[in-house]
Length: 248
Length: 322
Ligand SMILES: Cc1cc2nc3c(=O)[nH]c(=O)nc-3n(C[C@H](O)[C@H](O)[C@H](O)COP(=O)(O)OP(=O)(O)OC[C@H]3O[C@@H](n4cnc5c(N)ncnc54)[C@H](O)[C@@H]3O)c2cc1C
Ligand SMILES: Nc1ncnc2c1ncn2[C@@H]1O[C@H](COP(=O)(O)O)[C@@H](O)[C@H]1O
Image (cartoon, chains in turn red, blue):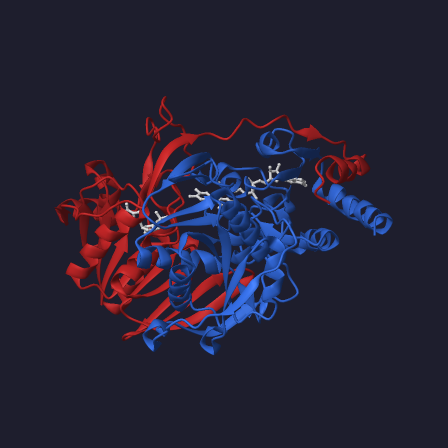
């Protein structure tokens, strides 16, 4: 089995989000970038397939050279090879088209992406790829088992979960649940050394239009002061929620 | 030109989110000077859509779509868009919509703007405001191309009854078997509980509650309020509560009208996932807990004293206002 994990490079979850002075772009000054958390779960599940079922594991990212440290981290965790598509990740349609090209040329059986990138929260790249390549797709995937070409997946639905049967080639939008939190891998010294020798190829993008353009950004309006209610006077809280906030 | 809305049904009945997306589609159609058309799957009460301003319903009767199938649904919506001459497609933020919409975007090679919080501020081309960076920012996003998809954030627009009649039309799209490569085997859903995604009110507990045995009062508070229950990440990681209750940046997003956080410190990753809620109440014994900075109302106190008393007072309030 040949697996491709699609990794997006995102600001660390503790980052303060700022935009440039003209409000047209994200300001990355001082921001630490990491493997998108949803992709980290997917990468760990892919490592399990590699170790237990003898899969080959590649990772791919659409981004400029500055994303390479994140890709090296994925190699240090255990991916065999990395592919960088040398382009700014402008929108979901464009990114999906680039990854679809890599997938088509690479003959992958299983594509593991995340349910969403925590930066632009698109939640669309794996689904768009599935449509472009006519491939089976499971989103919000919290469990995945592969037996030959058969796959059993569980997806989260509103208020519960659904078990699905499908077959390879398959693409998933994975998330927490795919593996236990405690099984997430952090690169060790040996992995980091080995990653330096692993192949990281850079390919040129193919032509594709964007479907959307982010014209301007802004931060949420500052929050007003919290209204504190005395614990001995909870009637006041109920009154505020009823009459002022009108939520009960 | 028209606006097409994808409506969701369960056992023939429209899901609650239908009224919000239908209202959004109707308001957008009005703004564009055109009509709103709905596509509905095995519905039993299509006429209800008229009340929310839908002019025409394309109703699909198809036994193979009794269980949700994302790819086949996307194929239906695409054909409905052609039938309706749609230039915009409106979808909800439900798990099913978020499964289907990207496939639709891929099939149509269309732009898709999710997490949209209001009507377009500009119509030609369409520009919508949506949340990005897990509620830490907003983007004004332009939809390019001849057709665009808008994903409406839960509870961002609300439902508005206008009173009207919808023309109902049977619609039979082509659905080759090849679209059904993914089959639903079983659905596991707690029928006695309110889903976080559907809830107007969410009651959430954190590590401050000390252990799973103390969740009785959280459940009871939720029951009194008709709310869903949720928890912080460590609570689900330690197995005190199921993973499905974990909310936040790496868990489920919450966009309820009221979010009550009990014994939760308000870490940045937690806030990122719940900040879209309209009103936030925090109960915490530490006045320095960061959550108070993000809250509308707060009670500095011991949850084990505050919550039982709040339950009693709410019961009295409910009895008086019944
Ligand atoms: C990559 C990453 C992703 C993450 N994603 C998420 C996420 O999606 N969701 C999430 O929730 N967290 C997430 N976290 C974890 C987050 O950083 C915090 O660790 C977590 O939210 C803390 O949970 P808590 O508030 O329940 O516990 P704590 O931080 O331990 O807070 C407990 C609170 O309870 C209060 N308390 C104690 N006793 C009482 C009492 N008797 N009465 C009232 N109050 C009391 C304390 O004052 C304290 O404020 C993530 C972390 C990382 C690194
Ligand atoms: N620039 C990118 N390079 C590689 N994979 C990406 C990129 N952007 C998104 N993805 C993948 O698609 C998933 C969903 O991302 P998004 O649609 O951007 O929310 C992510 O979790 C990644 O697996």
